[in-house]
Amino acid sequence: MKMSTLEELLIEELKDLYDGEKQMTRALPKMEKAASSAELTDVFHRHLQQTQEHLSRLDQVFNDLGMAPGNRKCEGIAGIVAEGSAFIAKEAEPAVKDAALIATAQRLEHYEMAGYGCVRAWAELLGHKQAAMILQQTLDDEKATDKKLTEIARSVNMEAGAGPH
Image (tube, helix red, strand yellow):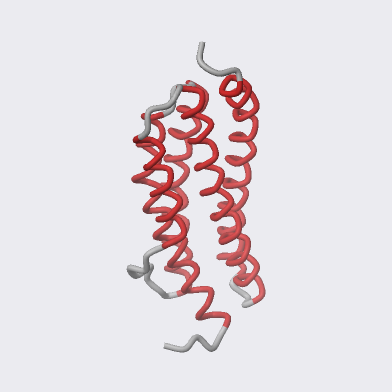
């Protein structure tokens, strides 16, 4: 089916984000369990709660637009999650594994930030002001999580760089 309007693109991308958030609800507990840093474990735990809120917000956006999330698969998130899962399965020093988990989490955050930034801008352009406000809230959450991951990475990367103890 040919997409011919920005509105259609908005809906497609919202569906992509919705599935991505659902995938994250399955991936984050595994990342939390694999992390050795208490601070990183806490970030993953809190982000899971946030992700559930993001799904609720997307439900509200779909409801406001008179649409349903459907069953579109977010291939981008699926790929990042698969790469992260492969690393979780490998033997590694705890700090090295934490560094890899942070890199995976930041890839996920950056994917989401790009997606939420686009749909927020499109919703605003199309006059969906309430949806744009909701999407901005989620974009702000994603940026804050990314910032926190960067802060944790400073110490984790130093520890990983020092090698085994």
